[in-house]
Length: 203
Image (cartoon, rainbow, N blue to C red):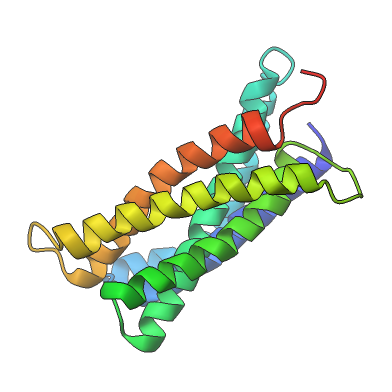
């Protein structure tokens, strides 16, 4: 395992912790949980680094597993960036449903996708070509558009068509709809990035 793998894991953990605190601040979180969350900027980076270190022990026997672990961390970071921007937009405009909500989802998803491209290319799949690969970029955006359609379709159905269930507030339900979309989108994106966009040219 390289030194930059640990550093990258620490950075991802720290960013996720800060965004999680931001998101939690907009929700009705019990005071005792909020007090615990003060330690997240210390806890999450350590957990991220330990996780990467543990998986790296199997890198020689299962190199794909280590790559998947890095992709998983990047996916978590993308999720928090997505949720963080979505939270800022929803709280700023006090809109949690309807067409405007879908626009917010598109904006937050696009920002997270841009982040995803650079982390996956430079860290997860370690593609260091300096020149712009138009073919690779085109494939990336095709996969991204597919992921965006999944996000919009799932969130639209869950939030606008199905609506809040089990007595859950519309604010919390908006996040639930988003998390379902994130899970399905992650499967789509990882598969596309791994086997189409950043596919090993020698494999």
